[in-house]
Length: 425
Ligand code: AMP
Ligand code: MG
Image (cartoon, rainbow, N blue to C red; front, side, top):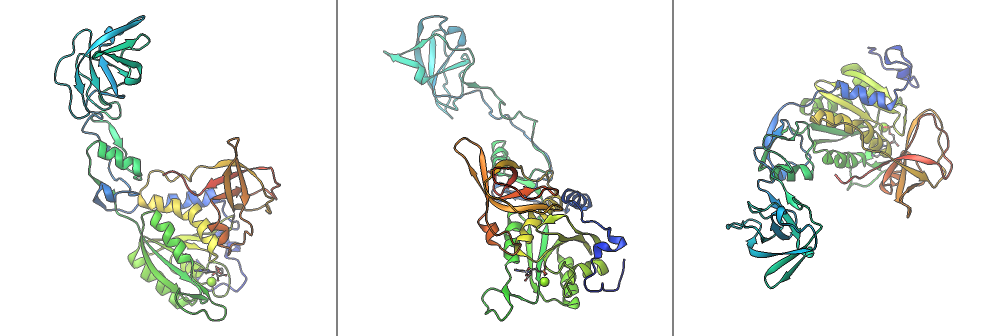
């Protein structure tokens, strides 16, 4: 590893020890995930506080769900053997089975019980006829032919059986998982410690909100979008503020961050400008992984280690920060959090309504608005100006339009691949 600063304008990727070419995104993502060991340490949390946390142990059910044979409908429970093969049959109604208050008596031949959804199906019955299919005449339930023995009865353990795996270690708890755990009577779960992530912005031009901007200055927006994306991942964020463009202050910020955090995410200072000290600091004092990915926006992205912390050096432009976070950092942080599934979200195909300018050579993430057509297909249009500094292109978008590395311009009417920002989870 070289210890002299690079002359201005020299691309570190052109130096032999860094390899010559920008990595493909999938390759960069795979390298990062392979390099990451999940944080250790676990804690017990109440279900209510467990959303987004990662299970450290398999959860097996100690009960059957449901625990009792019960009705899927409001209706009448009877023995299937009593159903009429043709015409109709009248049944004497001998009582009611309510949800939580089972019918205590016995049901004989030619008899039935009024039953509510979720109520225990009485012992000598095995079939429920929904109330809409029953005529009640003088206290008797008249049922036509055409029903099937066993219908509308939910068996014991239909959802989960006692001893069965309910959720596996590595599961990132979503609302359905919380409900499932509650259904098997689990109120406290063991989850992995949250990853601690230190963030700082680099740049002499950056000012905090609430101060006047001087000439050439801008507000630091990256820490806010980063903190938002990290909150969604349930990471614990250590905000180290803005770090000026000096070698000394950059190194000090790295050291402060590495002393406290499992991962460090910075923005800015990863190009080869004269005031870009982030990559240099990593190269000199840390372990350098890669720093160039064939994607747009976001070509300069540094990955490595500093002390015991993983390091992600994102570019400064606000759109680049978000694109590189979603495409690279997010899967890596999921791996760090111990999530079993680090696959990127699903893609859909849509007809592009606008012309998109693109040069071959990089995988591009343009920002778009995805809409559903009346015929059930999807269309997507560009949010307009796609500059890496134009954050409105992100804030007005609901998806990335993903244009493959080798592709050129896209003409209206062409099918493109789209990654929606939001899913149901
Ligand atoms: P850099 O990667 O440091 O060369 O920065 C690239 C561009 O992003 C420059 O126009 C910076 O002013 C801008 N930039 C860098 N950091 C931030 C930030 N935290 N918030 C908003 N813009 C930024
Ligand atoms: Mg800068």
